[in-house]
Amino acid sequence: MSEKTSSLNRMLALEMGRVTERAAVCSALWVGRGDEKSADQAAVDAMRRELNVIDIDGTVVIGEGERDEAPMLYIGEQVGTGKGPKVDIALDPLEGTTLTAKAMPNAMAVLAAAAGGTLLHAPDTYMDKIAIGGGYAEGIVDLDASPADNINALAKAKGVKPSEITACILDRPRHADLIRAVRETGARVTLITDGDIAGVIATTDPSTGVDIYMGTGGAPEGVLAAAALRCIGGQMQGRLVTSSDAQKARAEKMGIADFNRKYCMSEMASGDVIFAATGVTDGWLLDGIHYERGGVTTHTLVMRSATGTVRHLKSFHASPDKFK
Ligand code: VTB
Image (cartoon, rainbow, N blue to C red; front, top):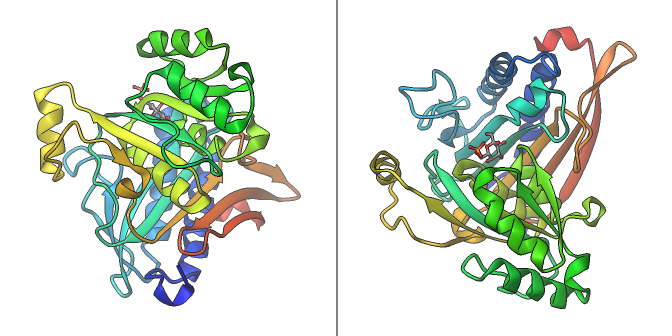
């Protein structure tokens, strides 16, 4: 899509990068301190503060929870100055609160901004996900195919043996059968404790060694990951997992009629989208926050679907105290 037909101003991408930078710097003060809540709160406060000075008419569509359970950045909250384009905001101010509290890799502040009405309003349930990086024919892997079929198809498309494929999966008891089935093909499994947005994006970067993401994680994280892949390229499918009546009611409230629908990437993020993430701890894709020379350094990924631009912004921030 050319710049002229993009509904989101290109400078908005840099603004969004500033928002995730601030959230990451503030939550990084809590790295390794065993306090998930404070780390998350610091990220939420910073993200909200920074979003509210941007000239957008923004609505949080994926946020910290519903209005009655989240005091800030709740679903439906208006953000921005109100002047400017209508924008849907999906955010995870601190993806990996436990990773942060334990000083483990891959924690990051994440945000997607999309043309109004173009992001799937995913409820806070689980989602079955499958994702691969770019450069493959459409549809070579599928959520409804068996793990073995997916690994074998991907190996064939990549021109390697299944034993040379690596799948990233969340380390959860619910994935025992999936992990076994993948290993039976000869493929490797990289287990992650949290942070499946990074797990999905990792498939797009050969340096991570991850070829495919599989398994069940948070639905909001699924939409954010789909937004990222829309910008950087790749394929992803997701299906909500709504097991209880309460979850179904939640999904219905968010406008979802067919609970079994399989969404492809461009149905989860259908319009122009901007994705920004800043590392809190060092990870596959991003360096974390580092303290040096009287300031802090940040590493931010900013991408736009309209042009497919992928920017890595390494920044130095003097006087980190002003971020508090
Ligand atoms: C994932 C992961 C998150 O939740 O979506 C996961 O990306 C799924 O939920 O970082 P469970 O922890 O219940 O398995 C997180 O680990 C935490 O929000």
